[in-house]
Length: 110
Image 1 (tube, one colour):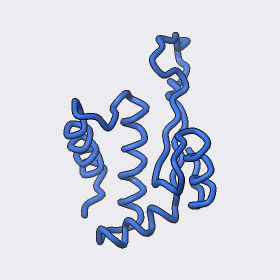
Image 2: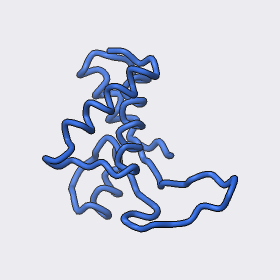
Image 3: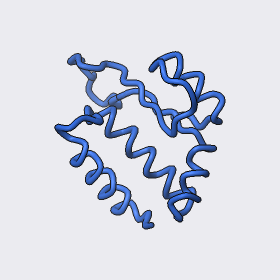
Image 4: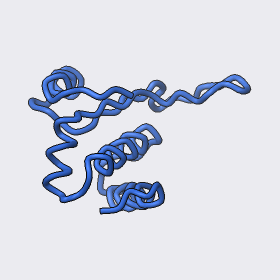
């Protein structure tokens, strides 16, 4: 996981997604769509999560909650992407509800 500024995440967003401008979180899966074997006692490495602290700060102010809660939300959001959830009609509501539930269970309330 890495914390970056808007400029850095905007560069990644353009390079990897073809989208101009900063975003709040990016996830990069290591083995997207493939099965892979994890040796016994080895940690499961799903991929990388990049969070823009500038975006997180602005969004926390916009939504009226703490920066810590926003970063927790973005981290969980990134993890859900690495676990295979995506923004499509089939699971957007499920992803959003699960994201909120996990953040709440972690103790980050609005």
